[in-house]
Length: 319
Image 1 (tube, one colour):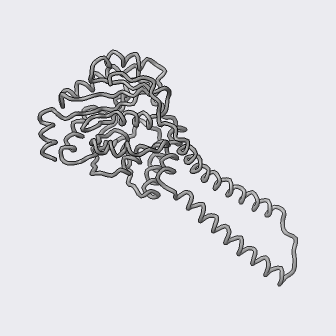
Image 2 (cartoon, rainbow, N blue to C red; image 1 turned 180 degrees about the vertical axis):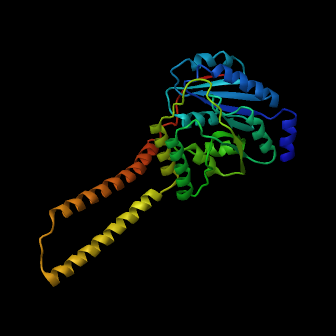
Image 3 (cartoon, helix red, strand yellow; image 1 turned 90 degrees about the vertical axis):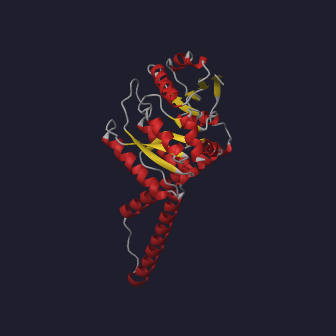
């Protein structure tokens, strides 16, 4: 198999699919397509670029259309903004290559690294992911939350999610087929990459500056994605609150026993109003937090049982 991969790459016959999620990248999308095509032409004569427009409200689609006339560039226009996870899913569902490269359209993922990905694929790896070496463009608080998120995921899940490894990666066709079998609606792609397994390796890269526009990932959206990741791949939060409830119950039994013994030995004294109110508010807070944690999982079940599609396609061009 390795010899076959090497021979195909040397003969420029590897069929490569590039899946590119697009959201309000109109200012630089033309330059990106030109740059990506130039790079791919050096590697293979058989490639496709699948641009998935995730509800852009700028000129992204009009700027893509002239390129979609050729057979190599294809466009999937979603009916609204479903999120990057859904856009990636749509691209993977339509990918036909022996290998699929996931890459952003803002030039922060260096296009030249694709050749390093392919070399590792030739070496026998079915998944090659980029590991970002710098987060200098991010705020200190965002870097702190990112570090703690990955650290938490390592502790509470049974899968190994590599820190600082995002969606920039190469997937063999069998990895793509495995991911496409995952039918959940609340998708956390970084978790799915790790969950399906396969032989993997990381390639370090330096994040470049955006050539235009700004990131649509607000702190709120990142927090929602983090919660989705935790609740999708771990039930530890439920277990934690089960143990907290057990601990509180044991404490209450102990206190009740102490009150009974104290009353029998020393008689009844007047309880303090303040301590009662503190206890009531404390236990109410614990109950509300535990209900909120339980609600997150119930909401996920609710969304899954409705069986709505992960995305809706408004238009396809080039397929």
